[in-house]
Image 1 (cartoon, rainbow, N blue to C red):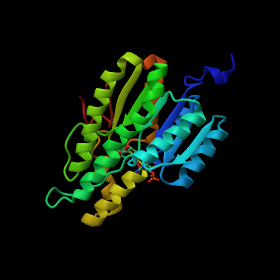
Image 2: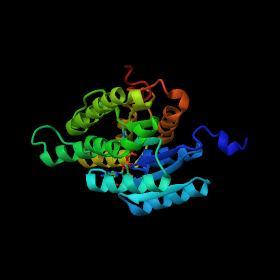
Image 3: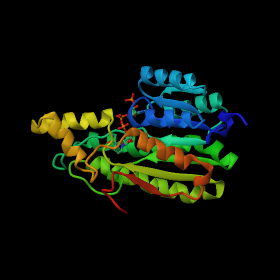
Length: 264
Ligand code: NDP
């Protein structure tokens, strides 16, 4: 048997949202390394174009299409294009997300709605758009990148926390409803990960407190008992694991990757 066809995800097609950088980029590359064809989306054309070329260079099929996942018409168009180009879908990774913070006093409504749109409603739109072929073929994996903010409350991130808690509710509801179709639905809950989003959090701390950068970064590292930021590759490896045929019994779960900060 050729080595290629023995890769665990050979013959599978995957879609990754928010794939242009950070965790999503790492997930797309890990899925391709495991043998899947991977379609990638985000809003920044140049980042997903470069990633699709890199995946093609690995000998896998890849498509890219810019899409704002908070806009249902764009999501519908993206799903149509990817389904036609890939010839179907097996693995959907809802990774696109964004963090914003503000204390509760005078919390801007705009921030509330923006956080819910990108971190919660987008998962609903994207999952709904790809559901028909998954149900039809009676096999699928839906994996959403949630957060430890899905598990516990945190100061100054009420909207992000509410949205990420909501994503766990959606994950569990979808897992229950889709069990008869052999579609598993799971969430991964990382602590702080070394990505551009965390760089933005560091800049935010510096802007608000005038803390030196090393100290601001250390403050985020110290939120984990392992005193470090998680690496995107750790999240990506868990996505690949959940996508395996042998992970079929794992559904409706939320897996923490935070160095042991939360143990439930
Ligand atoms: P980054 O900011 O580094 O990357 C986010 C990706 O999502 C980019 O490709 C961005 O591309 C895309 N994206 C953002 N908004 C939209 C949108 N409206 N439509 C389509 N794509 C969008 O984030 P991370 O890699 O750090 O985070 C990825 C996921 O992991 C998020 O859901 C985040 O909440 C979660 N997470 C991250 C943690 C961390 O510490 N970094 C910790 C816990 C969870 P573009 O702007 O071009 O659209």
